[in-house]
Image 1 (tube, rainbow, N blue to C red):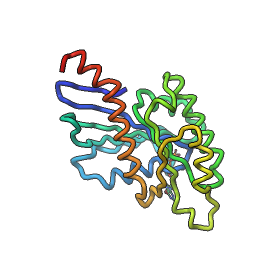
Image 2: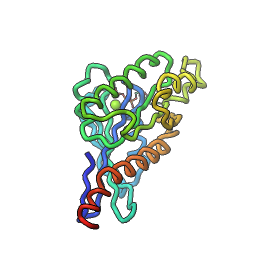
Image 3: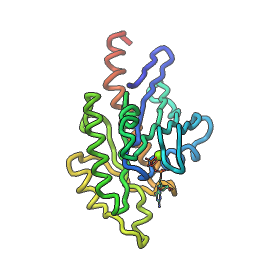
Length: 210
Ligand SMILES: Nc1nc2c(ncn2[C@@H]2O[C@H](COP(=O)(O)OP(=O)(O)OP(=O)(O)O)[C@@H](O)[C@H]2O)c(=O)[nH]1
Ligand SMILES: [Mg+2]
């Protein structure tokens, strides 16, 4: 859950990158980490990795500067996408304030994308959250492969599979090249900060007469 420190005028929010195994969640964080200067980023923490598979989670703290006099601190997390790490995925979701669902454009991952979105919905329910209330945006990753001989999904198919009910904003991305990475981060940060402010900050300020 977001932490708001009125005395230090700091807002801390947690954003989780969710999605099937190998869709590019860690790649998003690595790109952000490498592109950000030391003033804006903290240390990137990668807890247990085997090859390029996340076994626990990644964590990247970011300082997004001030909004309305409040320092905005964001913690980006990734879940391990592989099906067997279900318990860890749920653990990482605890206290989430905003979500990026990263989908894989590879045609062979069509079902995995849908399964992972269903898994997210189920896990959120256990925290009394749902896909409609929490800020959630989509990222269709690996779009660079659409111009390769490898079979990929069209944007229309991905929209149909993943966004017909959600009706949220979706960014096309190629995380290895950084395409769409900051667009995604900017949008989810904006929505999450707004959500946290409306949910926690305004009531707290009213209570304290600030
Ligand atoms: N061509 C291409 N490859 C990508 C892209 N994004 C990620 N990859 C590759 O896909 C593989 C998996 O990427 P990761 O970022 O480790 O995937 P993940 O979602 O963190 O996977 P888990 O930790 O297992 O859940 C790596 O080899 C990446 O280099 C992309 O946009 N285009
Ligand atoms: Mg990973």
